[in-house]
Length: 369
Ligand code: BGC
Image (cartoon, rainbow, N blue to C red):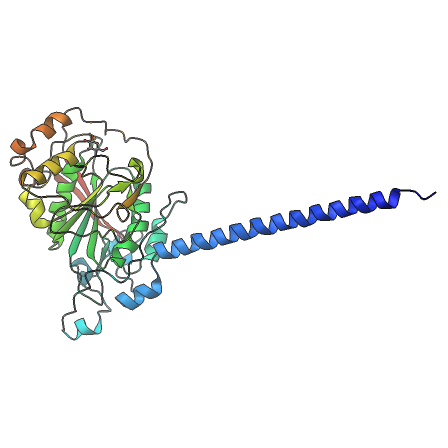
């Protein structure tokens, strides 16, 4: 009698082979999935860091303006300090002809951007990725005359990790936006209660000593735009730029909200006597600024919710920045107080001004409540 064994073995072998084929298929699928994903991430990186080719075509060949000393402080060439072009001026400028104006909409913009904070960045990498940014965080397009001279002012204290992300994302964006810009980080000295609006006033005062800026952009250090069509410039009305923050579910928390990132022409800022100096601690100062603008009959301009998307770097509440209990009372009296409290009555002590490779750091003693 024939034994049934060979058929059993054959069945087993058949099933094992099938399993092996399925496992191989799964393995290949997973490999392909992760490979495609890594391509996507690399593409996003290139997009965020701007295409060197596109940039070189649009702004001339990359040049390093200034050298970095052992302390990390840059030694600017005199032309760069004055906001001028360094060595490789374009032919038109060198020949004494004036450059034609940059277009209303920069052709270098790429639209939506991937913004992530899970991999830390180093200042060295940011510097290498932005060779055309000069000492003090200054840049202007080389092939056309920027439409606006913009000082970007960031109130700051002990947020170095956030600042690195900000510089990493914003320098490429601001260059693609074809702005003549400089970055000012206003660092509150000491351990007293934080005062965001007063630091912004200091930023205005110090930036104007350096260059005839016609537009001021005021940005929190932890807010990154997710679309480079959200141009960090000024408009005929004061502009609110951070209109759809992830923190608020990508919508405005309330119609009058003016916090996060905003911009104003110099004359708009001066017509409201700048910002209040007496909001110590968290909250209210942006509402006061809104009240100032409204009292002067200005309205707020905003990008669309899509273009105005931005991400906030999550963090614990800072020490010495508890909610200001006086804010409700202050906001209720903006119209009476704004002419007395503002840029005209600003006083502070300049502790240090450092022209660093990617930004100008101004350390100030702004007193206490
Ligand atoms: C505060 C603002 C703050 C807003 C959103 C308001 O209650 O007064 O300063 O920007 O909430 O957090």
